[in-house]
Image (cartoon, rainbow, N blue to C red):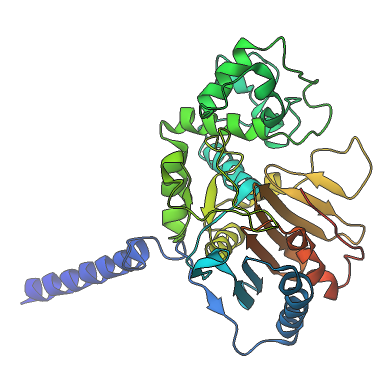
Length: 389
């Protein structure tokens, strides 16, 4: 009898442990750990501060976006909750389907936040060292002193490929790939201007095209697949993906301010510096994953969000994949803007006031870059923004 009681007691305990373990590891129907997939929360009963942010967002939307024929999406979150969200326009400007929460926009240079955090994830996992020379991972690179951190912080001295590829007689009828760019740099090293590494900040898309190659070398995976497995799928970013030229007939087109469609060019195949497509809701999930400690260690975020370029005085700086405003009040704005063809994008984080502003557009509109003005309702910012990069 005692053996039977002991057996059933142990069986019940074992069954309970299995249930607990399943709840922890499965978390949801998609077999993801609890807390990794992000669920969005629309604020209904708003706090006073949430109401202030919502009202300021609506004012900005009406004054700056509605009046300039904005075509895109805006989402503003306070305390991780959506307090303002609007969609305006059509997928083909005058035709097509209305813009909604499922339509993915080209993030342009906001894509760099994913490239940088992918590198830092590999660093977290001890698969690379960011202070190591990039040639340790790209042996053919003809610049032995440039480190991964130099690439991340735009302190490599490398010129932006957008400005030199055509001068090197690249055939514009042939799509340039990341590997092509590397070979072009190798074969033309005497012709390409390169500054002294780690001596000054110079924003250069070349840095992030090379970082994408490092991700592929270290992970033994494609850039697109690595981001999908490491970030998009685990976080639940169902409408986020890396573009390839095979998709050009199926992705959201972009337009000039006069409604003329922008055409794809031979530079559109390069990734790492651009070419992530996403939605405002998926980008909020990205923000939540960054903020809540489920995706990155505290030390990783501290490295990403600190400035590395102090040779010139001023409020502007650059971290590891993130632009910064380091304000006299002690507050910090962590953000990145994007601009490619007719796509304008903004992803801004205001940690001190737990606010995030995301604006994505596919028709050229400089007013998008004024969205940081929304945060002016809080003390400690104290100046106007006029960004167009």
